[in-house]
Length: 304
Image (tube, rainbow, N blue to C red; front, top):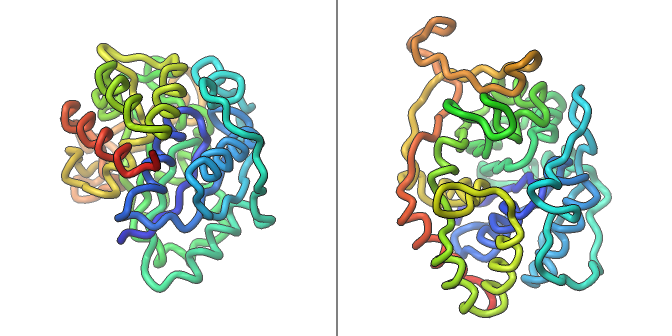
């Protein structure tokens, strides 16, 4: 069983990723931390608690950064709705986040762990950057950082930038320049791994969990050719089966200002970096049909 910490900003695709992660028998979710991104951190925290109560999971939740390190915060409510998780009538939350903030909570879990833990970050990387700056001696406790974000082709927030990196490019720069072992699962993968209308109709018949997911995904305004991209779910797939996503090691730099703000630039010609050095595994391809079949199987792990 793989032990993981999730750092997220639910958000509809984050919600689907949480649903998969907390119900998969091969993952042990030790902690979920929240960050401002798709919506404000109070909403991302509330949405996380709603999901854990829905699935009857007792997993600690710690609220994190309310804003990027330097840049003004701009959410993605135009994609995820005002609440970040519309389409389903969740009961009012009865639980609360723990009193520790996200960065210190990550440190606490890592220090208590007997084996290295995988970090999965699917929102802006503000919490992760602050953790890197505050607790660099914890790196030995981290098996890998799997990030949803970035692109080495076209962007979705600007012509060259992906939303999570664009939201806090200064944090992303700190993360990419860190010595943590990293995997970037960006738009080059996630815009291929589209949940099809047929998959949504299938999960809608798989009990209350499938009904809930179908309802919130139906409100998701992000759209690809033939389906809806469940960006963040791809990180959970990679954590469970790295062979499911084609990657290539490379050097990626983050642009922090100007018209290319948030760009993740892959120096594949080795103009700026030594050819024998890399800082990240870059996700490049995925089998979309496999992804849909896998997602349906994951819903089968959830309460009916």
